[in-house]
Length: 476
Image (cartoon, rainbow, N blue to C red):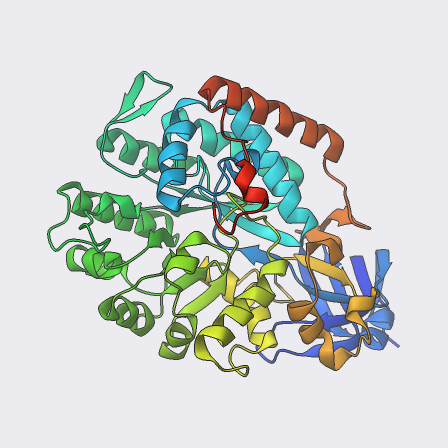
């Protein structure tokens, strides 16, 4: 008999959802890890004799799967969630586009990054995309750098989506500093050169607000003169740094962008929301196999739902994302799988659409593909990064826990509170539902202090007010 091979970590006795090309379910299964890579995935009896590990985790009664990937979110959201509850989307954005540029500090962005990373980690998200500064903000790259530092400290894999914020320009920061479009394009180039490392990737963000919109909310035939400049710059940076392009996309925007930069559309284009799309938009997105980050809880999806089934059936790579933690959401990506399924079944009037197993793909391997990271992430396979989570299946809402129904239980019954263990790059950052890399009490205290200070700086004294009628009325 051959001598056992060395491993740093061996997860045993789990129900393993590999999300590999064959979508194998191993029960009981095991995963062996050496340094930051998976070296073997297979039956528990086989790996138990083939590997001798420094540390073993007995995962009996638990489900092992790849770390979840939240492919669209916003920095700043954790510290302002709940502010102006009930405001219309337009009013909310008007308030916070100014707030983020005028009333935030490095301390604000660092506290937000710590809280967001911790919240995502505890919910089983091992890779998360964020717009640094939310809209985003590029003044001296304060938000970009503070958020990146925070995510690194918590130990989460972070994708920073940087680029020029919504026009018109100049943007005013802190009430005095003015940045032109040229300034923000230059800062984007600096950020792209500075940030990419083994554990911090960077996507370019062309803002849809750079497009001229007509009163009906569609992109006009003649865009703002700056629009082609922005898209061409973004396309160039994407090629230079070999990263995907990430952007919000609403009615007419994809069609308009393709008019000026045809090569921008393709599998490397990753679009958020894609609600209120035109027929031409939908055809372009599907035909060129673009990725779409669908947020089932977002205001945009309520007003004009994303055509998820049509896009999937047409060839697009549609994934599920949180869109951040404000105004009325959280970073619990697992809890959004079930509503994403239900939305599509209600829209189609068909309970057979969007199977549970496919929905799990949309937060693992499909989401990795959307970020251009599927060679390393999104499935449990030898050679891939050791990003692994364990979901505790011993609670009543998982029972009876039959291996054949593991995907069903995760999609319909689980939420982030069921995640027991989170491993990123082979490092255990959550164990027994406790964050190992940061003090949650200290982190929460810092977040509360920074949130309160930002309220006072901005003089948004009515941000936390709940109208008396909200307790009895049917609408705000």
